[in-house]
Image 1: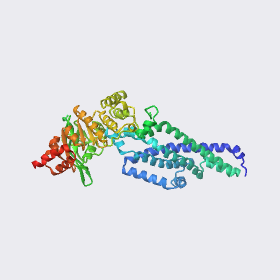
Image 2: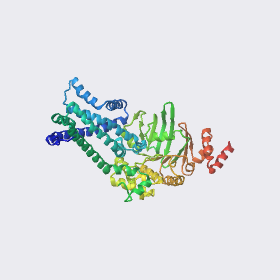
Image 3: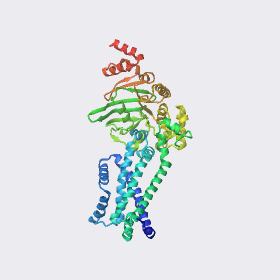
Image 4: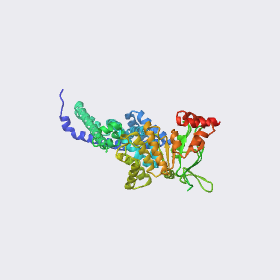
Amino acid sequence: MTLDPTVITDYWPLFVQGAFLTLRLAAIAFVGGMLIGAVCAALSLLNIGPVRAVITVYLALMRGIPFIVIVFLVHFGLPAFGMRTPAIVTGTVALTLFAGAYYVEIIRGAVEALPKGQWESARAIGMSPVAAARHVIVPQIISPSIPPIVNCTMTMIKESSVLSAITVSELTYQGLIVQGNTFAPFEVFITVALIYWAITMLFHMLAQAYDRRFGASTGRSSRMSPIAARYLSIDGKSGT
Amino acid sequence: MTGFALRTTGLVRRFGDLRALDEVYLDIPYGQVVSLVGPSGCGKSTLLRCLTYLDPPDDGFIEVGGDWLGRERLSNGTIRRRSRRDIDRVRRKIGMVFQALNLWPHMSVLDNLSVAQRVALGRSEAEAESRARALLDRLRISEIADAFPGQISGGQQQRVAIARAMAMDPEILLFDEPTSALDPELVGEVLRLLKEFAQSGMTMLVVTHELAFARDVADRLLFMDRGRILADGPPQQVITQTRDRRVRDFFDKVTAFHPKFMQAAAETEDES
């Protein structure tokens, strides 16, 4: 078979538009989702009965229902209650809530994995809860949370393609449009696939750079065994 | 000022039906070194957790340097719960050295000693650092100031934990079994260190199984069982002369392994 490059050369503006919208959706869902994740994780760790129950229900719904069904529920459900919002808005909200639910679990898990004594020693010495969280807890959860957050974010970027089902004109949707005009599905979706791959790789590389810059000194080197640390430190100080 | 570094009145902590602390009354004057012993599960650790307010007592009062921790009893007899801010403020007057040390692994030793001084006491960075360095000097570990807790030995970690608590200039230092996590050869070293503190006038409450420490360093020995303080007095006297059967049983068992105490234990048997 032969590939027809004119599909790309003629329609590239649509691919670019789609890719930019996908990037924007992912960026908003990432930032919004991390906010939800941090706030809900903190709230649920405070262990106030009703608050924790609400968060548990939220997590159960988001993690127990297929994303496309969540999108349909929000998109077709809101008008039933008299709320007419554009697809792009319901789509962004659904994606943010979806990603947020996974971030909550990651952050909460990372905090719970720390020995309880870390929090207790900070509180016993007289730090306020906020100071204890800021100086003792948060710096220690960043490094272990990065790999699962990267994982989850890459899934979320890919799941954003589901929003094409409610006419959000992101990358997959634009691909479907081009395909409708050209009847060249293979060329179109190879292009779409490469663009998704480029976006997720870009994110992966950014996360790795962040981990090298901020993760290393706060985590690994200080968690190595004393002997390993001593032998692996080149300047005799290590980690700083 | 009450003249006491620490005073508890009728301290009670319940876990379901169990009274882990059953009306504990305790006065520790400034400069006294008190050692607290008892069988496991007797309430020693619960007492330390209540005193640091990690596990608030169900009833009773705690005073640290004349300041109420948690609940206060006013001169007209009314009882008030204090604000969280007040609890955190009074907490700073108690230094706690945990059994597991709980050093913060992501910070250098120097930061372990200075971060709480800055954020909880509001000291300047320079002030906090000079206090930290002075303590490291005093504990003879100034060379590890820039190391991370994971890079130093167990004995050094123990000293860092002690220095971290002392950096807050507490009214009293609490130790939860300071020697239990150490190699035998380090035990003596830490005990010598505690002895030094004792001689410098530091007020201390030490939960320990080291009867040698209790006898040689402590001014006073408390024996606790089932949430109550059963014996309280000069160490030698408590170890050898207490008549209470539970106290007797405990010291007979413990001293059986320590030849130095055999004689003392035997003398008591002769008396009875």
